[in-house]
Image (tube, rainbow, N blue to C red; front, side, top):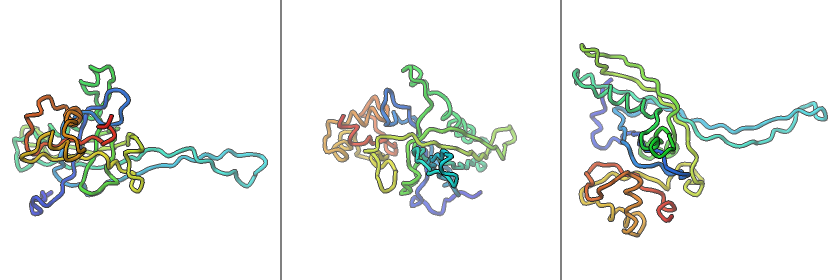
Length: 239
């Protein structure tokens, strides 16, 4: 499968932001563990949601009872991630990337140390496709290896992921789309600092610590260009 090299920098890549689960009862993901950039954008993905209704038959109404709405379930999404390093026969990139996805179904060390064991929380992102952007957990990962090097190293794999939405604070949602628009990811460019980002996003440079805590940054002076930072919702920064 050829890589989309022709689109150059104008091509918006899909990615999966993998975060520590929050500590306590917060609905905001914890520090960023890594950003999993897709080698290829998905050819298709499936999003579903269910509304629960129940019907209680009664002898007085033999033609059918009135259904009763019992609530809505969170969104679910399945997406296939295609990985290919066949142009580098000695590379172990496919092996490492599949392991990173499998780790999304395992407990993180930080959550275990905090006595709140939990797998990572993730956010799928693909440009302006807001319907597909929501905080979720990975319920399953199925990896199919389809090409191997002479040493047995996998060089190509297709990974099927199933994500389940983790409902957040309704105040952080856009009522027209249901997407969590109060959070967003910023890619660091030259000249950025946590203080300047805090001023730009929240109008207060002194709240830079909220960005640092959300991304697990210990040294705010080290901010490499290209790093992706989760910017917390304004109401979380206010707290």
